[in-house]
Amino acid sequence: MWLAVSLLLIFIAEGFNIFGEMVAAKLPTTESLFSLKSIPLFILVTIGACLLLFAYSLGYQSTKNIWIVSAAAVTSILIIEPILAYAFFQQLPTKGALLGFIFGIAGFIATLTWR
Image 1 (cartoon, one colour):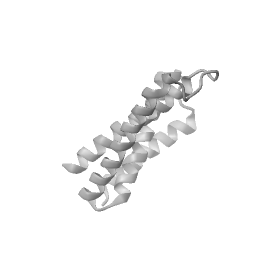
Image 2: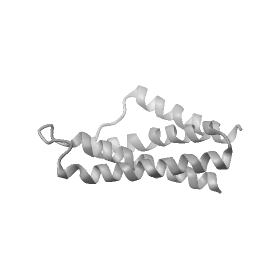
Image 3: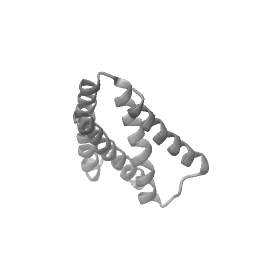
């Protein structure tokens, strides 16, 4: 059960971090990233980082295997980032990016099933 909680927290935390990155990427280049408008992004990414630290700790304690936790984190990025990239930029992945996405999900499934 704690592994499932850890995986959920990893997906949420990575989502917060990636969302903050995508919003920052959309900021006009004339606007400073350190302006008052960016404070919510720093708060969001800080919350995401704290959740990620907790999720890694919980995941390792429940599995005693850091590779499972690492694979979950990388896979969460592989799943969430393309979704948010499409939502923010309306760009479809190239063939190579789509293939990497498919292999990433296959690797995640293999990590969870072949212990």
